Image (tube, rainbow, N blue to C red; front, side, top):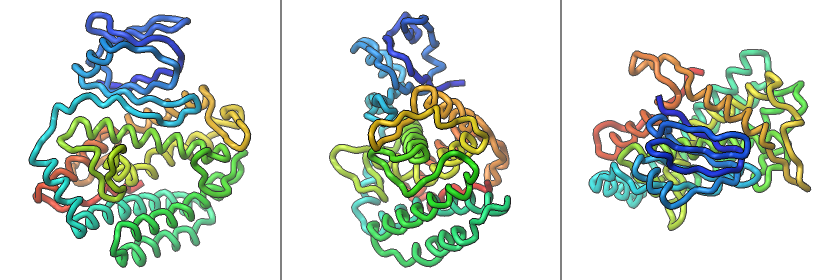
Length: 331
């Protein structure tokens, strides 16, 4: 089974015959390349052109993060699954305002539906979240269908998430953390640092899965396509952030697996330190490996597999086989 390789310490990544060799001051480790799905680089890691050529040959993406755990960029090997037909279909659905709006609305609807599932879960366990549930339901059932532009959808999604993030104080009551509102660049408190870090991981996980499909990550629908950014992974991640990143956050904080000592403060900014990032990644990978019973497929699937399945559904929509319906968690 392929796994993601996380490099936190500084050192060197190189090819050693048919394995990946990670040389650090403390030790040297070897990883069979067939077992590596993608690589996340957090430390100061040197790698040569020869290593990149090896990673390209093996179709392995490398995601780079800055000193504070912020996403910097990805080494995205030349696509091996390109499909001219599907790229044309992707562009067609972007250039047609009505077709683009259909997909953009589904990404927002999926995200709101999964947010509702999270909030209702904690409401059913005694948390005072009835008002939040009502607000999110109003956005999903009232405001969302009335949106006539992508910009209106983005506004609805943003407003709903603001109410959702405020509910974290109730969900995590009794913890040493509180959130006064969403802050991104930089995060102003530990909860915002956890949200930003978790969202970044979901973005690049979806990007890694897109690479294994015929889809082009540069053509998104909710997030505008431009000259520099991957956008399709941002669209699809909207559906999975509540059920991956946020659930990991609630587990880590709620079970006191992570605390104030796992953060560094620099002026007004708060970041996860190395130990905090290790804890988060460990729980995040555990979540991706966990399985649940998929009612439509009638079998158990992992959340890692679920990401790929969502992209296949999107492909079917683009080629006209089946309308896209976003995944909505039963919990």
